Image (cartoon, rainbow, N blue to C red; front, side):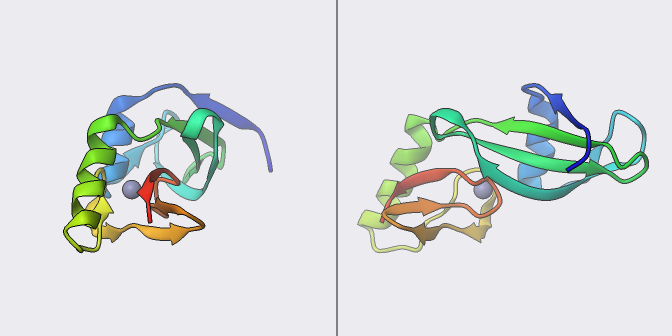
Length: 112
Ligand SMILES: [Zn+2]
C-alpha cells in the first residue's frame, strides 16, 4: 500500500458510490474502488485510488442504520432475497457467517 489519505465523511461521494456513478478525485480524474475492509463499530472503509495521481483514499462507510436493518429484516421475513438498502436491487446481500452483507459496502445489514 502506498500513501493513504482520508476523505472524511464525504456524503456526496458516498451517494455517488452507492449509485454506481463515477466519483471525482480531489486531484482530478476519478476514484476507482480497490476494495472494502472492515472498520470500527460495524462500519467499513472503502479504499479508492485516484486515476490520475494514483494516490489512495479511504472513505469511511457508516454502519447500517436501524431503518436499513428493518427493511432487510422485512425482506427476509417475507422470504425475499434481500437487497442492499443503499445500492439497491443490483446488489443482493450475501451470507457471511450469520450476517447478511453487501459485498460493495462491506456492511452487515441483518442476520441470515
Ligand atoms: Zn451496498
